[in-house]
Image 1 (cartoon, rainbow, N blue to C red):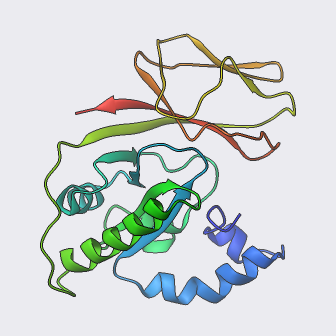
Image 2 (cartoon, one colour):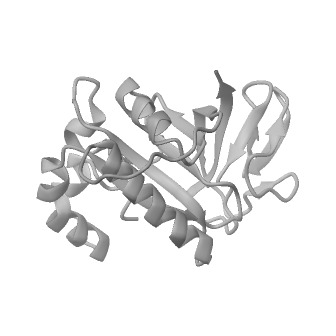
Length: 212
């Protein structure tokens, strides 16, 4: 998984895979970058959103760029490996650089590619590399990542079909994961990126809470 292996443990380790070889080739470029924009798409047809480590510099840049209007902050990291946007200095509070993921929409949709291009141009304009009119300001919706549940059992299952952004009350059952029950840790607990096909060792679901 190319977006979960950006730690020294993996990159300096003895494991080998096509993803690790690619990451090791890219490592000097990523480490030297002042700012990073990592473009993604989603399995489900949900609204686009930002994902970033919970540093003020990332939140300020994402809010200034304005689109997408939905934000997912990660105060404690991803919880299932080290993503590109947390590699090296970008994972530290004292670094100057911004590192953002833009989840631009569902896989293979034309609108997803179009938004990815727009966000890239907005990102470049934010840092003064091109001239461009800013995107219209939109009231942001902000979430904080609380828990990442990894699939531990092949029988992992949600209590009902989920696509993302559904909410649960505190203590409400969201999924069963073998003998474990994944329950909402807070009121208005928001589900993000629920897996469509559970694979042991991969992320099953992210749980967040709305903030500010």
